[in-house]
Image 1: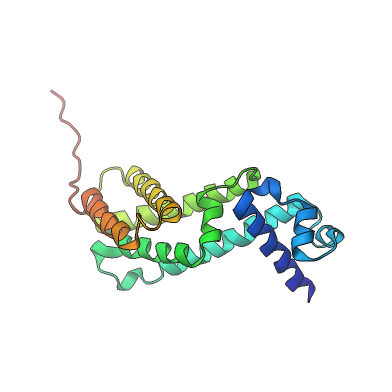
Image 2: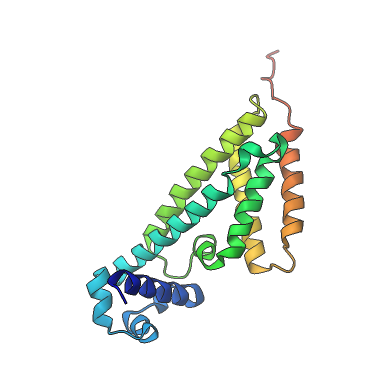
Length: 199
């Protein structure tokens, strides 16, 4: 196995342990045993466990980011009033295809290092910027687009968490229907708010 292949194998084993039991369970001895390697190889390839965890977080953050970019890549062809639904549907498909990647960020495991929360904050900023752009393209006079974007972001995160934790109840179709109605309620029927006149 090449050094890069071995590196990916160690990251895969680490991710499996973290996903099942949390970061605290991903000790060098445990990872080495499950990967069938000498623990010295972990230090050789990553430096120490902390750097191994950062490498894992960065890999999965890049994967989730690429999946989000793919989910919104076809919005230009979507009907204007369906763009948010199409985006959510794309992310939902990514969550189903790569649940361990998304669990890492939607349900931060026990003992998660600060880098995980840093990547989460960066991702949130990107998603909020996307939402604001989409909202204003649909309703340029929408009152408080930033706050509306935050509501959509929080709602979407909650729905994805429900889908991961209880997919039989929070089905794809049920979530799609809810998102379609939520988008209509928040944006489609919204009227610009005028300042109250002073008496």
